[in-house]
Length: 479
Image (cartoon, rainbow, N blue to C red; front, side, top):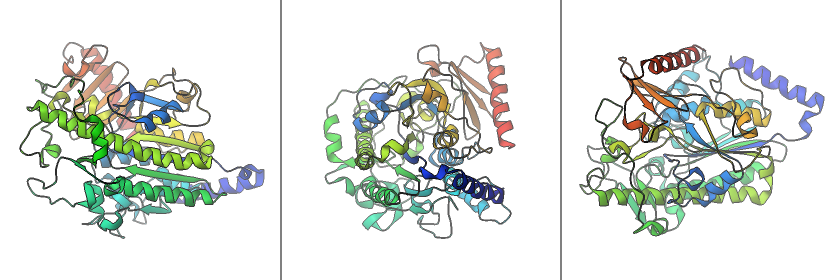
């Protein structure tokens, strides 16, 4: 398959040269991936977290207020984004794919950046775009022989800076502190350290991303695909102290449905969060500490937003934004006490819903959000549609171009999965199907929908959504 794709790419370049279509450079792509970002932003209807740069981006394009990821964990969600396909289930999904691609008999379709690279784009990745910084495996995540994204990037940059250890970047605290994996982590769950943005990982990688943007723009003949991964607000919640100051003492809105579900569900004990050093405090039972955690999360979002602003300002200064498709994508949501969960890894709305913003010169009715249900695998075909890159036959998603034309157009049901369960989200319901056949059905037409399992009272809806879910996954995974 890869040989056929390369031949098609060469043919398209020759055709463009013969017809004169190569005289104007195709649109660039700037993809911004933000880790653990809830849709708790002003442009998504919330108001207590300051995110002016992301909000301005939404005002210039389309915010997708009901965008759902394929999996509530970093590696599997990024697998879906970067392949446009269902399938990856855990944080090793891209490394496993990379290992198969390294074999000579591999017939795996190209990734999103590989597809653009094969069609004449210069592709560069900075920060956490695939799961590991720089896309490398190994004990220290710096092996030159173990790659998550073979043949995808012209430059796949690990930005540990003066810390020298990519684990220090990934673990996310000031000055690149590396965590020790014991029963209880030595890293603080929340942190605010005085200093410039560069004492935390994203300050380093955004400076590198600005440098890479300048290099890409210097080549006026070649379109670029630049992907930038921002680590915050991923755990632990650490950011320069000045980002916490506006939230100190601030009264936060109540946590919706904070109680643990009474019946069977995908609830869990927040093990990832609880491993960090919390001084023995539990936000599920300590309201003061819960507010502290939420304030630090808000500070991390504002810090991430500032990095988005730096990158966008560099693009705007050049005027090249007029010929660039900008996508801001959150890799999944995060519970801040809803359902008594502090983390991701559930199949509830809070884990699966994340921000998606698309900016393109052809967007109609800019600034109007859409409530159409969409999913992360739609981003691959959408970018092809908006840039004129040939539409692949191997992706599982659908182009969102019609929703950029009119935010009132219909979307489509979103499918997600994690552990031993999978789910389908429609405009009105969520069905969660466990591997042993147990079902959760939630009616989103009522308040606090995901607090009452109504499966027993709605067998026809359960059967219809169960069939739709199985058909979608089984049919797609065969191709």
